Length: 131
Image (tube, rainbow, N blue to C red; front, side, top):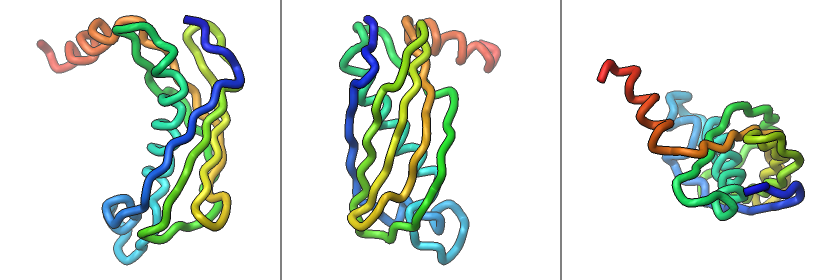
Protein backbone atom coordinates (compact mmCIF):
# COMPACT_ATOMS: atom_id res chain seq x y z
CA UNK A 1 0.00 0.00 0.00
CA UNK A 2 2.93 2.40 -0.19
CA UNK A 3 1.86 5.68 -1.75
CA UNK A 4 4.50 7.15 -4.04
CA UNK A 5 5.46 10.82 -3.81
CA UNK A 6 4.66 12.55 -7.09
CA UNK A 7 1.18 11.04 -7.46
CA UNK A 8 -1.34 13.68 -8.55
CA UNK A 9 -5.06 14.17 -9.04
CA UNK A 10 -7.27 17.00 -10.21
CA UNK A 11 -10.84 17.84 -9.26
CA UNK A 12 -13.10 20.41 -10.87
CA UNK A 13 -16.41 21.98 -9.91
CA UNK A 14 -18.58 25.00 -10.68
CA UNK A 15 -19.15 27.63 -8.02
CA UNK A 16 -22.87 27.63 -7.18
CA UNK A 17 -24.78 29.89 -4.78
CA UNK A 18 -24.61 27.10 -2.15
CA UNK A 19 -20.79 27.34 -2.19
CA UNK A 20 -20.56 31.06 -1.42
CA UNK A 21 -19.70 33.05 1.67
CA UNK A 22 -23.28 34.35 1.51
CA UNK A 23 -24.58 30.80 2.00
CA UNK A 24 -22.45 30.53 5.15
CA UNK A 25 -23.87 33.70 6.67
CA UNK A 26 -21.63 36.42 5.24
CA UNK A 27 -24.63 38.06 3.60
CA UNK A 28 -24.14 39.62 0.20
CA UNK A 29 -20.70 38.08 -0.41
CA UNK A 30 -21.48 36.01 -3.50
CA UNK A 31 -18.04 34.43 -4.02
CA UNK A 32 -16.53 30.96 -3.45
CA UNK A 33 -16.22 30.64 0.34
CA UNK A 34 -12.94 29.67 1.97
CA UNK A 35 -14.38 26.57 3.72
CA UNK A 36 -15.51 25.26 0.33
CA UNK A 37 -12.05 25.96 -1.15
CA UNK A 38 -10.64 23.82 1.67
CA UNK A 39 -13.23 21.13 0.91
CA UNK A 40 -12.16 21.11 -2.75
CA UNK A 41 -8.53 20.74 -1.64
CA UNK A 42 -9.40 17.81 0.63
CA UNK A 43 -11.48 16.08 -2.07
CA UNK A 44 -8.58 16.39 -4.49
CA UNK A 45 -6.04 14.93 -2.05
CA UNK A 46 -8.44 12.11 -1.25
CA UNK A 47 -8.71 11.45 -5.00
CA UNK A 48 -4.94 10.84 -5.06
CA UNK A 49 -5.13 8.32 -2.21
CA UNK A 50 -8.40 6.46 -2.76
CA UNK A 51 -7.39 4.35 -5.79
CA UNK A 52 -4.18 3.33 -4.00
CA UNK A 53 -5.83 2.11 -0.78
CA UNK A 54 -6.97 -1.49 -0.20
CA UNK A 55 -10.61 -2.37 0.38
CA UNK A 56 -11.82 -1.22 3.81
CA UNK A 57 -9.17 1.50 4.08
CA UNK A 58 -9.92 5.24 3.97
CA UNK A 59 -8.15 8.50 4.70
CA UNK A 60 -8.93 11.47 6.91
CA UNK A 61 -7.69 15.03 6.84
CA UNK A 62 -5.71 16.26 9.84
CA UNK A 63 -4.00 19.54 8.85
CA UNK A 64 -4.79 22.28 6.33
CA UNK A 65 -2.51 25.24 5.66
CA UNK A 66 -3.82 27.42 2.88
CA UNK A 67 -3.89 30.91 1.47
CA UNK A 68 -7.07 32.05 -0.25
CA UNK A 69 -5.58 34.45 -2.82
CA UNK A 70 -8.48 35.63 -4.99
CA UNK A 71 -12.28 35.70 -5.12
CA UNK A 72 -14.27 33.60 -7.59
CA UNK A 73 -17.85 34.49 -8.55
CA UNK A 74 -20.82 32.16 -8.93
CA UNK A 75 -20.89 30.35 -12.26
CA UNK A 76 -17.15 30.09 -12.72
CA UNK A 77 -15.30 26.76 -12.79
CA UNK A 78 -12.61 26.03 -10.22
CA UNK A 79 -9.98 23.32 -10.51
CA UNK A 80 -7.66 21.92 -7.86
CA UNK A 81 -4.50 19.89 -8.36
CA UNK A 82 -2.95 17.91 -5.52
CA UNK A 83 0.54 16.41 -5.55
CA UNK A 84 1.74 13.95 -2.93
CA UNK A 85 4.97 15.40 -1.52
CA UNK A 86 5.91 12.82 1.10
CA UNK A 87 4.69 9.92 3.18
CA UNK A 88 5.71 8.79 6.64
CA UNK A 89 3.93 5.60 7.64
CA UNK A 90 0.22 6.42 7.57
CA UNK A 91 0.82 10.18 7.11
CA UNK A 92 0.64 11.78 3.66
CA UNK A 93 1.53 15.40 2.90
CA UNK A 94 0.20 17.15 -0.21
CA UNK A 95 0.79 20.39 -2.05
CA UNK A 96 -2.48 21.75 -3.47
CA UNK A 97 -3.15 24.58 -5.91
CA UNK A 98 -6.58 25.88 -6.94
CA UNK A 99 -7.38 27.97 -10.01
CA UNK A 100 -10.53 29.52 -11.41
CA UNK A 101 -10.89 30.24 -15.12
CA UNK A 102 -8.75 33.38 -14.76
CA UNK A 103 -6.09 32.94 -12.08
CA UNK A 104 -4.68 30.98 -9.15
CA UNK A 105 -7.11 31.44 -6.25
CA UNK A 106 -5.57 29.30 -3.49
CA UNK A 107 -2.47 27.36 -2.54
CA UNK A 108 -1.44 25.32 0.42
CA UNK A 109 -0.57 22.03 2.02
CA UNK A 110 -2.83 19.33 3.33
CA UNK A 111 -2.02 16.37 5.54
CA UNK A 112 -4.06 13.17 5.52
CA UNK A 113 -3.73 9.93 7.47
CA UNK A 114 -4.51 6.44 6.22
CA UNK A 115 -7.25 4.71 8.23
CA UNK A 116 -6.54 0.98 7.83
CA UNK A 117 -9.92 -0.14 9.20
CA UNK A 118 -12.72 2.32 8.46
CA UNK A 119 -15.33 0.28 10.33
CA UNK A 120 -13.23 0.25 13.53
CA UNK A 121 -12.45 3.97 13.14
CA UNK A 122 -16.16 4.85 12.80
CA UNK A 123 -17.13 2.57 15.69
CA UNK A 124 -14.64 4.33 17.95
CA UNK A 125 -15.94 7.73 16.86
CA UNK A 126 -19.59 6.73 17.41
CA UNK A 127 -18.78 5.43 20.89
CA UNK A 128 -18.35 9.06 21.95
CA UNK A 129 -22.13 9.33 21.90
CA UNK A 130 -22.31 6.77 24.68
CA UNK A 131 -23.44 3.83 22.65
